[in-house]
Length: 635
Ligand code: ADP
Ligand code: MG
Image (cartoon, rainbow, N blue to C red):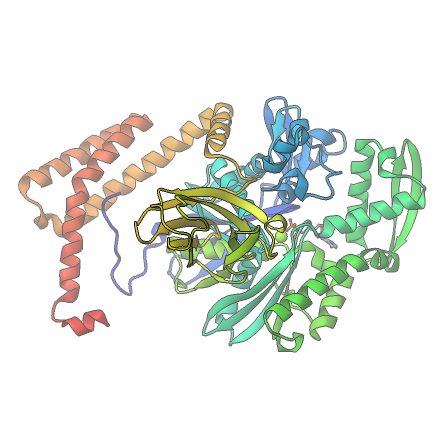
């Protein structure tokens, strides 16, 4: 749209001008969507989770596949898990952006054969899960969850959603973030930003308004554990350090109970049919959650059709999960150490994630930090609420627009140098967005090309780090070894995604690459998936595109008319006539319900008003500068 809308200083936009945006907590176990509502005065802002029609906030992150593709998600899909385990995908967030070698415990997943076929494939393919609908990537399953939340939000908020903030664990690496981003585009969502879950939690607690202090966010969900240390100063918070474990969470508590139950009756997991296993897992989870309130619970299950009943006390359960909880406490300790802090320096500890309801977890955290952790905001909802607030700020709705988020890179990024060593360029816990360059040189006389291998990880050897990408800088003029000067620049954007470029300084030759992580999908694969999803939902898409196109057309007409009211005198008669004519045409075209025709007319009106917008800008700048000298302006 060519016309720029600029409101007068001090005047808040009218209520109907608030843009509809959402925050999504895309969890391993449960996902939620939230939005900020505005009371119209421009002052009141109320973040709230958007419930489904049955009044439930959480959408289980479960997708069921039938022959034609995904046929249901959430509670409905979960209800099918026991009877149709192979076609019911759950916990797939653990597999996002991951290859077969990355995951130790694949037992609960029905991995597609071709993911494991050859060694060659092993190292590059993202894990796929076999279903009757074909092999499904975790990315596609995530897109189904996102679509469902998106539809819920559209129904609840009534109208087109202009963008979303999606949260990811702070510990997610580049591949996992990219996979999440790809899932969003597959779901047709306009992604405003990926933000770290603990950062979102801090936003939800309104910590930017607190006094300067250090805060720890301890997030134990279903499948992931994250700890972040935030520093608040002057209403701005910076993430000093993040650490965690992307495969440790409440699911592991469930598995510990399953393991215990099987051992008690002398069975192994292989003795159970897939649906018996699923049922046992579901009972284990239910018992675990009940033990939060009760001292003991019984668990019923069948193994090879034989019935068993066992009693589990909270003390026994505590013993089972102690090693897991201790691991999280150790991670907290080393994260504090990384940041050069002691537990006593932490002012607040915030608990996030359903698994922080487990009493032993709360005890251990309190013990470490010598204080009672905060649980005022529902630990299930806090992340989605923070994401919604952040989306509202990013789209420009919020009066709180000066809220600044500083995030850090979770792992170091570097390149391979001679001898299979990694030279780190951006160190872990560097604030993002961030850009850093480093000079390298050639190793051999007359060397005309340089192979650049981008790696992520903390270790010194290439073999111990994750390979993100390779590219080449060619056309270096032949020189003696060590004479060429090659500057390699790493740029990490606000989503935590990396772009690498290299330049030979003497000749100016450049090469660059947007890092597509090894386990990510190629652009054409995403295009293929998009095409496939369209053929299932072509009508939905067409209807949505038409609706969006109409909204854009009406918005443009309104904006042009408003601008003409004020500034029509900037135009000559011919220009004015053309613009008026195009508005009439566009108004008629809107009624054709033909997306293409509308979009063409929108483009025409947009072009015609471009110079008008430029004239208006010039004029407003001139007005703003009137009576000021250069020093004022620079200031
Ligand atoms: P994620 O962010 O990974 O989706 P959540 O934050 O929604 O996860 O947490 C889900 C986990 O919390 C599950 O393992 C679930 O069993 C556990 N959980 C939820 N309520 C309770 C409870 N009352 N007691 C113990 N664990 C609980
Ligand atoms: Mg979570």
